[in-house]
Image (cartoon, rainbow, N blue to C red; front, top):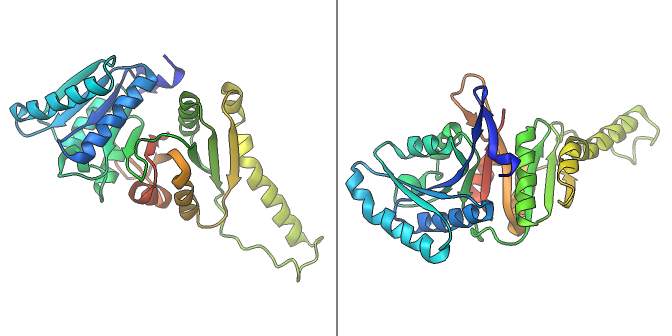
Length: 289
């Protein structure tokens, strides 16, 4: 078991033993099922397939078809199927408590397959207890390319740790895009301001600090994962656009969500919203402290 599969929850260790996927019989949920099976095989853990329906008896055909498909593609993978009468969000939230990863699609005919389309994405991010993989994009199988990490100034170590683990599992490079909080400050015009002016010196110090944040913030994790190649860039303007463009060549993008005072759970910011709805590769949402 890798160290990322054990977390603290309400003062006690939570061992994350499986990959969980929500299905509803739609084509999109089949894509999510295939990706979840690949993720479970990569982690060496069982797969739990969850179908939320008003009547449990209605779930049998979808669950049987799902189990058969996984057996054909991943015959050595242990698969458990679960029918539940609770709502789709509640079903995934409950199952995610012991999951190394919870997987959903972005569109569908309803139920779990369409969980992350529209405002429902906020509810899922707010209630899941662990990493949530949103299967979307032009290459939703997540094969090839870098692991992409969005690292704002207030990034949580758990988010970066997950990204390092993801890169290690894949044998992929980790690409970090850092977005400093004061990225919108405009530089002084060098043609009008002497290079030795206080303004230019402050700007130079700020730029050096910005560039150092990814390296300083990830230094400990780099030591823990020396086999992971890492490249880091600072984005001072239009971070959502820069990240969106970077997802064209990425295998997966990792973002964090934080709890907001007065809100029931974590919420993705503007960058998170953009990626959840427009990313060209799958998105992993990691709840932060």
